[in-house]
Length: 138
Image 1 (tube, one colour):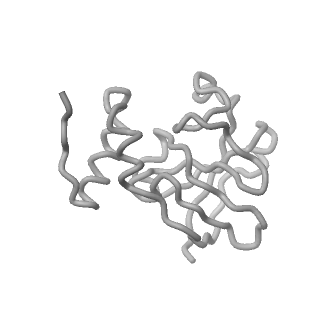
Image 2: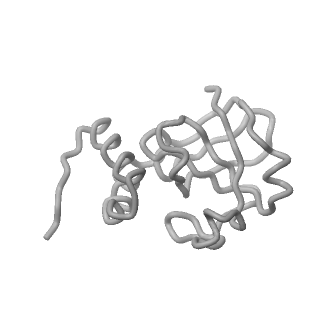
């Protein structure tokens, strides 16, 4: 169990509109028993599954966000701005049920390194953590 800062986001926010209701891996954002979460993938890699203490829902990391890199903050998907604002920012205890994959995280992000400094930062941090070498395919 670890204590982390959480915030909330929704697909209708100005910085998310261009992505619609899609995650970084192209699936639909989820808000049921299993819910989507965005993180710095160099901390909580793609596919990480966790539960917030006292809540019945399971969260799965399937998204990332530029504002999350280097913050150790988890952004929880909410379907509306009202829900998002109700959540606000909270310090919660989470239990990681299953760690995701750094290699899957890299396979999604490496082709996107031209899309932003924050993606390059996550890729660099994962490569440092895992000892992976930067490989360029021609």
